Amino acid sequence: MPFVSFEDVTKIYHMGDIEVRALDGMNFGIEKGELAVVVGPSGAGKTTVLNILGGIDTPTSGKIQVGDTRIDQMNERQLTQYRRHNVGFVFQFYNLMPNLTALENVELASQICDNPMDAAEALDLVGLSDRLNNFPGQLSGGEQQRVAIARAIAKNPDLLLCDEPTGALDYETGKTVMELLQAESMRRGRTVVIITHNQAFCPVANRVISVHGGKAVKEDVNENPKSASTLVW
Image (cartoon, rainbow, N blue to C red):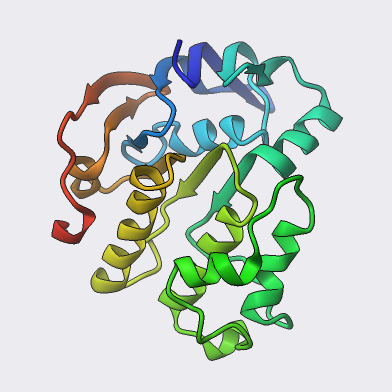
């Protein structure tokens, strides 16, 4: 059985008398340790997938399994614990605390989980061992995103969820971020899910899930992913 499994998942929002089906029978699976890219146009349901998979939102119906856990059956308290201990998040905008140093930002995450990585070690993994005491305002956009990745991986999460992680970055910096995320999967065996509209990221993934209209319309397995260092977009 896949490590991550969506089975006939729907998510319906009601806006007055209007019913919006953000997910309309979504089905896909991701194996443990894979780097998966969920790709599709705006409005396809990508962010809803991330929010539900991360325990930020709940499905209207369907079955969602992460490891041995049915997250669709969790209550709010259980979802809070799931987000805290099992999931690392990397967003397009870095969401760092401006009055805390890079080290302190990472320590925030490591303080709330069971088996954290040392914060300085996490920053060293993303190449920022010389920037521990810098505040976000003293860092470039790429460095801030690397702090955000360090914060996410310092939790030692089962699942690393990334929402357009290069969207606010220039090309070269974005490529560096993709290399870091690929390394998390390849070297550390972490399951990484990247939500993006950018088709150029597909060749570096173990699995590509194409979504449209709230459905997974195609699922491709790539036996020989390319190195993220070769990315061009």
